[in-house]
Image (tube, rainbow, N blue to C red):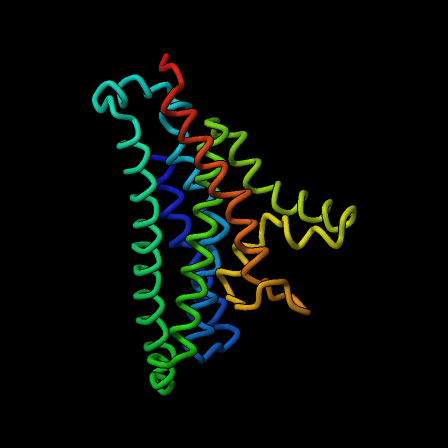
Length: 228
């Protein structure tokens, strides 16, 4: 039930963002769409945590894993379902954004089918996937809803700021947010370039350290954990 409310809140906030776009007279659909999908990266990690910790937090794991003894099937199905949900929510918000844009700015319909629009859609979808995987990693690893949500929301900023202050030369390579930043604006150089663009190297490091490794450990924990 909580997961459904998170989805409703995401769509509601996206609609609110459309109103802000109208007030600001954003008449380019690519920018309009980017503004509408802005709430997704903030709320998708919470949704991922709720989806991955629900059984363990609500003590329904016994029912779940008795019905399907092969736990890996359940865990894998949840991960796939979460990724598909990103596409579904993004599609719904995109359709709402398109209809709203055409009503508000009919004279700018020519900006809908452009490379800028495609890049905006790919950028926000990529960032949404990264955000969802970050929440999934925390949920898998911790198996505790409040702790996983707190970690997902606070760790990226507290850790990244601390590393930047203590080890400025190393920080870009071990940043929690590097993979998300790369998904937003892919940079095909290996290292972090001047400015804010993140190279493939730091992005892969972030992906492995803060997404793949926690998911792997969490997967192993769920397969072996005693059901009570």
